Length: 130
Image (cartoon, rainbow, N blue to C red; front, side, top):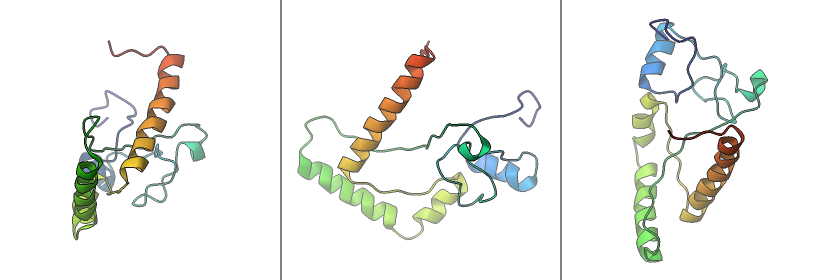
């Protein structure tokens, strides 16, 4: 975008974009999430802009099928402590990210819901990874 070779981009609000927003060299038109970004309350969502689309980036840690529940729970508890520890939110903010903690069951549902959402879009538009 800075070189003028593309007119627009959809990406997560990362450190590079944040610096460009602050300098005024690019401007955010809309956020893809269901809700406005807390750091950019004046930037509408796609849905508010008339485009019926929403997506949210997420990441998680998975274990092999059959991992004992007590091991999963121990790892999840350690992640929860880390995510809630002092300074983590501040460390993630420059990258446009914010920590979110879920239980293994909640994360499983996120994965199931996302797979179902994108499966239909991939099928509808005949998208492949080739």
